[in-house]
Length: 387
Ligand code: COA
Image 1 (cartoon, rainbow, N blue to C red):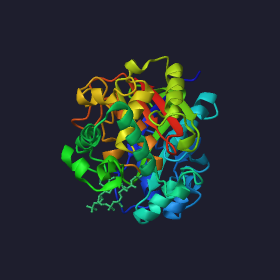
Image 2: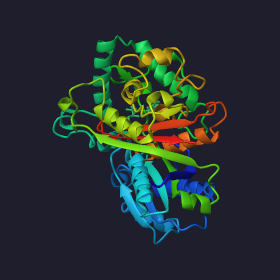
Image 3: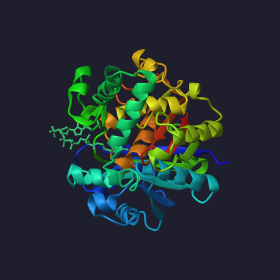
Image 4: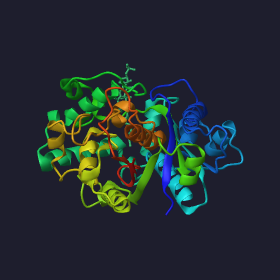
């Protein structure tokens, strides 16, 4: 099978930004195209991951619009939507196109602009990804469901409030060193539990923000990577695993494990012929602090109930055995939903290339993993990369 490469990456700052959704997408894409030596190259496809640009911004037909603005007509253009895993799903489609021989060079963009409307309206749009009948109609939101999961996890495994606060503290510590992060200040442990309650027990600092931003990667066949002169610094795509779970949380057998992650990670490790202990650095979908612990367990890094032990031992920090969310994760890097998966891929690609921001580089990582959640825990994409 064709070996697929990531030959270039780009990303805008994440945060509350003045640029339009199209400007953000263009800016990240142009950086990735330049990084890939592909300014004069012919792209076969442009794939855009975006959760809900029509409602967040009023801009429709996004993939065609961006392709036109980038001067890439007549490349095929498609917008991919799987909720907040839209960026990873767009990447997955690009990998499939190149592996099948339908394409040699594909531009992938993840983008979302969420700050143009007030946060209440943004929350209502986000809540559309959860079950309308079983959850949203009853006042459910992603944060409320995460709170339910956190309570159950605390009950089953004895996780304390201060234990949970270690996750945002680490996220903000890393985010402070990431020039593109939404939040760049460190926070003290006490600040997490003292901040305003969002959905008991989750406070403001347990939640990812609603952000604006875009990220982009170039997916290429080995022939295209060679033509671009990008064989040395390119990152190998070793696997993509994608899986779903039942839409409503109440239909799932367990609250403290997300089965779609277990399935997606299982597929990815099988495809890459690797085991969780082979991974040197990973970006996990910590939309809410509790999810970072559950993700670590579901991906297979540690046994259920024991993720917090690794955190307490410093194993998930930059110098630890398995650094998690080195660039601040969704909590501090920010979470423009459709952009997140592509940002994760961009961040681990930089780790493998040895080009992570100062203070965030992991020592010579060979294998990296990204994990992106769509919906509330029901549409997951896990990718594995290598040198
Ligand atoms: N973490 C840290 N600070 C945050 C923040 C967050 N998640 N969200 C907002 N802030 C900051 C704001 O910048 C603001 O600071 P400022 O006054 O200096 O500008 C302050 O906290 C208060 O913001 P406010 O507008 O009152 O927050 P809010 O209550 O409207 O929204 C959340 C906070 C957590 C409810 C909102 O960010 C949210 O819904 N997050 C989850 C998004 C989500 O579900 N994503 C999909 C997951 S898959």
